[in-house]
Length: 464
Length: 98
Image (cartoon, rainbow over all chains, first blue to last red; front, side, top):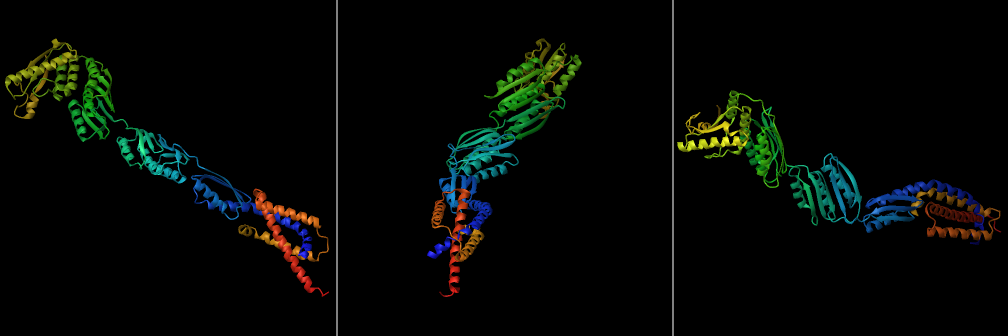
């Protein structure tokens, strides 16, 4: 030992090359060592769920900065890095992901994109939500504005995925999940979409509930356009079902005696209540116009166009809204067609005959009450009568041979008088019209068939 | 330690060999060694550095370099001791009996 001590006093010259070795070793090994430790630390954290992870190595000391999703996960992460061979110290700069209270997540859809925002519990769930949004919304841009937070309710991911499905049914709007409460607003993409969303919300995971569902259905549109040039009535938009569809088309056929009805209607659910009760009289009003458009949007009826004469315009403006079911609105934009040029009595007679050849003035069975479907025809007769202001006109009523002759005579007189009264109420002078009943004495067809009888039940206009 | 040894074993071997050579020479060298007083001071310095390394008070890269230096120095000393002892053994065998 003593000798070793004596020898050691002479070992110092080797220190000089040793220091050189040390310097070279330090110079060449530091960065590779740090890179290796960083890689091993990252590998050790591979299975640990962290956000914003940052590993920096100085010498053998590792600084770990990360947001963890639980205290246990945070401690495990630090322990994993400490256990990496070669690591001397771990500078723990980890923290817990902030807790969101309430935990709010939302998906908002506008024309161009879907934006997911608010809080998401884990990166994996966030990724799943983004994937589901991209897959389910087919081609729409999906923007991720979600933060990671703690405090999500159990089964959050299931609820959020179900809600993402509903975003696809919206044209625009927002679905918000605040803790376990779901709020929805916006406009459904299609008729029935609102109902489909409400049905789907019943499948929300246990514990979740709907706080507010203010999804609006798109307006229920029905349109009718009377084209005087093409002589057509074009029906477009929606009708509630097959029965209503058939009834509307039949009503249009009765009211528009000279126009061809073009039926482009589509049967869709979601019609406002009283749809048929409002649309049928509105079609009647449209039939009185020379040209016009009827737009029914939910419970709002807009009728625009030209009435044939001033009194008709007034009647339509004032009268149509009264026929509507409650809560329906009528917005008339009726102008009056410029008066046609006067014609002489012969032309007038031709025009009357032409009109009455296309359709007949119809009455309730056995009564002298003019049915509403005939107002369009009457307006045209009045317009024609206005064109020959000097002509006197005999309004003659005729019946078929059914029933007693006296009763038929009386009925034909009353019906002729009803028509004359209608004309007078439209502003024509009463002294121009004579109402005459002929009973069944002047048939124009055989009374042995129903068709012939129908032809015999008529009102004729004879210019005197 | 195993990791570090594996990582720069070349430099450690070099330190041992350097120490062995220095120890080999030191037995027959006639020059003056360091004084006893300086020897003690150097021992204290090394002990302080070892203390600092064990306590891990030197941070980051400096801490690593300190560890590296001390490990190399320790192996150098081991090499010296082995070298000196072997040389002494060889010399005592070949020397004529007194």
